[in-house]
Amino acid sequence: MSAAAALRPIEPLPLPTGLSLSPRLKLLLTFFRADLTVRPLDEWQLKSALLAFLRDPPLPLPLLPDSDLSVSRLPDLQKRRREEPVASGVLHVRDLSFLRPRKGDGEAEEMTGEQEKYFEWRSTLVQKLEGIELNLEGVKFRMTVEIPSSDDFRTMKKSWEDFYSSELLNTRNPVRKIAKRPDTIVVRGVPSRWFAETRVSSKPSTLVTHTVFSALGKIRNLNISNDDEIEAKGHGVNKGLISGLNCKVQVQFESYNDFQDAMKALCGRSLEKEGSRLKVDYDVTWDCEGFFRISQYEPVRNNLEERDSLASVNSQRKHHTSRIESDYRKRFRE
Image (cartoon, rainbow, N blue to C red; front, side, top):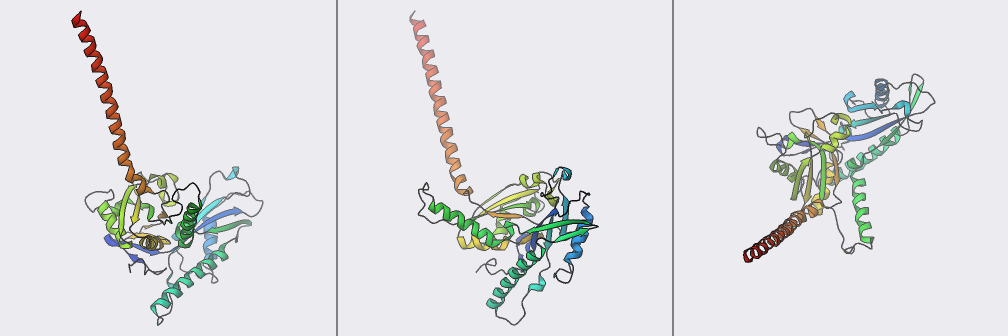
């Protein structure tokens, strides 16, 4: 059994080259106006009121640092309708030590109990935060909470099961009777320098990246590219970054079990580097387009196109030279 297969929900996973996957809960917050006022929105005041609410005894978040909560106003507040959001935020809960089970239980029972306790606590926290109203000096704001799909393994697994089930029922699919499963994960928004060779280059290395992701399972194919789309969106800490700082990694595993264990290990965790205070919240998903299957046939198509183009050029040259020779022969006879 690999380390990713036996990983608990709140247990960190050490990776090669000083990297590690640390567990955390990430919640996406959206704020709406709950009254008819049109007073300007104060981000600092909204964040302070929300932190005070989160640190109350009913909620088990007394050790929540200020840096784990970010709130930002949405642009063009005066042009927005009343039912549209006015601000967004991200809440991270990184200290999950209180969810660890008691000592003395068996390993299997301990792991099962920890999973049940974690999912129960997460759903309870979302229910308590969903729809609350914050009163800021007479101005009320209503908040909604959402768990990102990339952080919820159960939601991710249901998405690919529904996708391939629909493929089996598709009458236009000639191989609809063959059951398929995903085998490739896509990780976006990770620092390129963390996957580069030390003192050699700042660009990600295939060897280093393969060594890191081999800890999650046996790899069949690997592809690394720049992730400029994440930087162009300008969300959170990625806003204003120079192109090329982030990279996108596509990893194809040899078996479905390795793919599933790797996806379970990457969901709900942040990437950390030894000696750095940066905690990277990457975006993980699964490949439904068949990237490696398509790229496998691209070189063959290119060679065929080049061969056809060369053949057409040679035929044109032969036709042109034949015309010159025929004209030369006519002139010589005259």
